[in-house]
Length: 401
Image 1 (cartoon, rainbow, N blue to C red):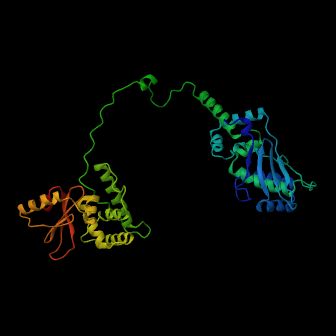
Image 2 (image 1 turned 45 degrees about the vertical axis):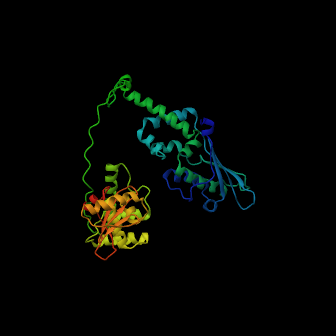
């Protein structure tokens, strides 16, 4: 818990960069000291000290800003700026004025000094009193006090509650008091006003109730639609990139809707590239689509033919179909012992086994580890196999799908 004592002391190890005050209240702070000095040369040396980082940590308490400022001697000088703190009665008037003025309260919460309070809280001419342990006591402020003034102005720029702390109150206690006073003002302005929102008794709101059943979910669409066409504009994003993002987002959303699983979860770089490419047809690719295939193939170290073949497998049956394309393995004898006679009996010909593959002329079946058959075809005498149809647990059915 922050006590009033804790809230009324702040130390800034670092001060915001720059010397020139940027807010109107920061400039008013500097003006209060400059009007006291009228010694441009001394102020100039103080500004230079501030720019060169001669001002160490700055501590602020009610009525006082203290820092050690390094000058020409090895030992730094203790420098302070004093400003009269408000009495409790003055604070009461000030807080009441802020609570009664929504604009002033909003400005303060936005860490700005309200214009209506400028004369009340900003130091006037001669009100800011400098002191320093240096031997230059002829005409205050000395260059060390001027340096501290310029650095303090940057603190005020960032946080006007620093100025209010100088006047005697910390930020937390000020906000707590303003909250209480603002609530009191609101109650006085609308003592009998009813709330402008509907309400129910707490007992009724917390009572157990049987909720009506949720409506039946809408049927899933048959597939992913095409994204809209994006005009080619030199100032606009790349149309192909937009098309790819829209298509990919729709494909993932469709998979989540129909299967409850994210299609990219756990995919390798190659598998994800195939997934992206599968959203575009492999025949008659447009120029932009060819560019996409080329970029994906280059990123994965494969050829565009490899990518097109993988995309065809993905459209055949997703990730499992791609694994069946890429991964030969040695299945047990049982599935082949049943598949070859079944194919021969169905008039499909005699299929030659090779690991998890059965081949007959230009047709081929590949068995996945999940027990599904995937059909492939190629030109006669060519080993360029391409996925065809849909997978099935029955080899005869897979050839016909």
